[in-house]
Structures are given as structure tokens and as C-alpha cells.
Image (cartoon, rainbow over all chains, first blue to last red; front, side, top):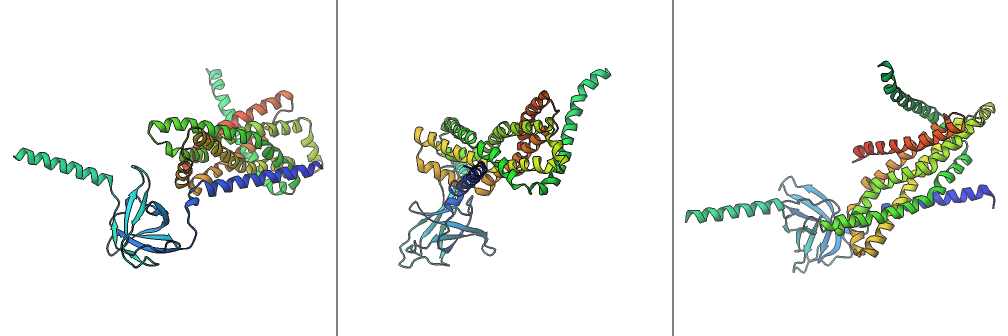
Length: 160
Length: 257
């Protein structure tokens, strides 16, 4: 084999291998995997607080991933957080009065939106608004409640 | 006293002068780069030499680094009960730090030294002067292709290194230590991002590639034309590039965070 051709072939192989490796790393080991590019419809929900919810966080129903958080904005009128959910088109049988809750995976994990089914015969469709929502559970609030309730108990005890 | 001061400051001034001369050399090299592109065959030959022939060492090192990372991190994470984060931690440490730095150090040892020795011997055997006599600019014909080849090869080598590292980490973490395959990948894919992690590391790789090839070509170009001179220049290439890589890595990490 002509040495110049073997250089060229080897170098070409090296460049291809390098770019293939880079493409694999970028698409298979990063959050791009979760990027749902299939057809989807948008549903909005308002929360008093979204806590640490981020764009592209998963939307799950019964633990199954059915969509992603598309955007989080502040509603200027109600001063609530307005979250737009992109739900995959194939999940089009979700009752319209479903209940949206912000949950945390594990004790310190990422936050996601969990949908619990309602009983309405109508289904969610593009532009629907989810009325029943529950905001993110804030660990600080919980600790605060725990401390104040503990304090009031001891205060009532001393007044007796 | 004066002699003492001179002995103390002379190496310092020498070092500064060396940095300054490398800077001047870089300017000349950059000016010659467009003319260097008129020798694509030479660039191809250098890419083959510094890139393709470094693949084996990079792949084996990547595999072992990933494997040892998996073992060590599993031990540390199990203290905190967080072994499900193993995939994430392996990927982040590889992409952001270990991939670019270890590949660069290996690259300096494997390709940088060879470039310095080759160019140094060209200088010693008057090949560079001969080129000038034939109106061929050695900066364009000798230095530019080697510099460019380093800049192109490093990011690709880093990608291969990272891939092998992930593979090695997966091998130990999932096959040997028994972490769930799905947990390993899903934790990684939900916490590693393309722009801040993968591409960040590639910027580093690009900068390290330019730095190593610049130092290697400069040292060869300015090596005294004796066997001892070439030997010293080769050693200096490894020492200088290693220190420069680690220092630049710190600066780049601080900026790219």
C-alpha cells in the first residue's frame, strides 16, 4: 500500500473516531437524552411557589415520564409562578381536573412535577389550565413550622 | 552580595526572557499560519503522527482512569450513601477536569517530545537553513503544520479519552460493584449538560493543544545544535508544558465555571 494513502486513511479514521466519540458524549451521556423533541401539547399550571424547579424538569404521572417543563414565568397579575408543561402527544387521555404537585426525587434530589389523575370525562388539551396545584415543599418552612409548634407547646405547658 | 543577588535573579530573568521569546515566536508562527495551510500534505502527516498514533496510549489510559475513578468514588460515595450518583460524578470529573488535563500531559510526553527532538535535529543538521536557502519558510513548512496538528488533535483525543473513561467507569461500577445500570445512566444524563460540561472540557483541550505544540516547536526551533542541546530541549518541553498545562487549567477553570 502506498504510504501516503495509509497516512490519509489512518488520519481520516482518527478524525472520524474523535468526532464520533464527541457526538456520543454530547448526545448520549448528557441531559440532551431527556430532551423530548417529539410532538407535544402545552398545558399551564400556576403555583404559589415553584421552589427549585428548573426548565426541562420531568413531568411524571404514576412515576412515568410523560413530558417536560417548558417554561417558568411569573404571572404579573396573580404574582404566582406560571409553569408551562409540554406533554407528549401520545398521552392525550389525561383528565382535565388532574392535580399537579411539585415533588422532590429523594431527600435532596431534583424537583419534578407529578400529575395525579382526576375524574373528569374531559381530557387535557393544548392550552388547558390545571386548576388544582400544590406548591413545592420547602424544607425551611417545614423546619420553621416544627420549631414554632414545638415552642407553643412548651409555652402552653408552662401556663398551666 | 552582588554575586548572590545575581545568582538568585539570573534564573528568574532567564525564565521571563524565555516566556517573552515564546510569545514573539507565537506571533511569527501565527503570521506564518496562512502560508502553512498551503502544505496540506504536511499537516496530514503531522495529524497522523501526533493524533492517530497517540490513540492507543490515550484509549488505554482513559480506560484505566475511568476504572480507578469508579472504584475510588464508589468508596467515597458509599460513606454518604450516595452511590447512585456514581455515573454523574465520574462523567463530571472526566469531562471537566481529568479528560483534558491527563490527555494533555500524555500528549506532551508522547507527541511534544517527538516534535522538539525532530525540529531540534532539523536545526542541528542545518535542514532549516537549507529550507531558507530554497526560499521555503521553515515557520510555514515545519512549524505551522505541527502547531495546527496539535490544536486539531487534542480535542479529538480528549473526546476519545472521555469515552473510554466512561466505559471503564461503567465496567467497574455496574459490572463489578453492582450499581444498577439504569441508575448509573439516568443520574448521569439528568445532571451532565452539553455546554457547561462537555464543551467546557473541549475548550480546555483546544487551549492545551495550542500550548503544548507551541512550546514543543519553540523548544525544537531554538535548541542549541548539539546532541546535548536537543536532549535538554526535549526535557524542557515536558517540564514546561506540564507546568503550563496545570497553571492554565486553573485559570481556565476559574473563568469557565
